[in-house]
Image (cartoon, rainbow, N blue to C red; front, side):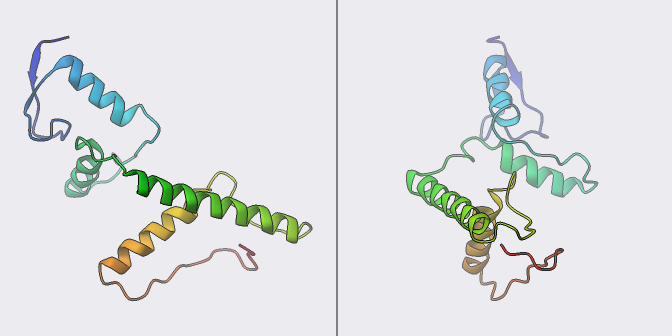
Length: 135
């Protein structure tokens, strides 16, 4: 497990290092691909796009969030969940397409909008597949 292996150029798990012990390679891969988040990209035919996604997920320390960022994301998640609960109580008999199973969508969209604004995007168009959606 402590034997050193040269990392191929197709992986980003080493960061600046190109040689790691097997134990560390396994630890990093398990942390990336066997943890709380997953990513599907092997269906993408564009190698540059696949490498971009892999680099974002495999680079060491990429998933580190500050305490303030974690608090902000939690706050947005709680607000979206509370809003969903409010709609369920206010319009009990109305057909709604709720957030169940997709609670993180609202904080995610807010982050996308924030980052877009920081990048100079002036307008965003969001499509809606359902008529009469309350939330």
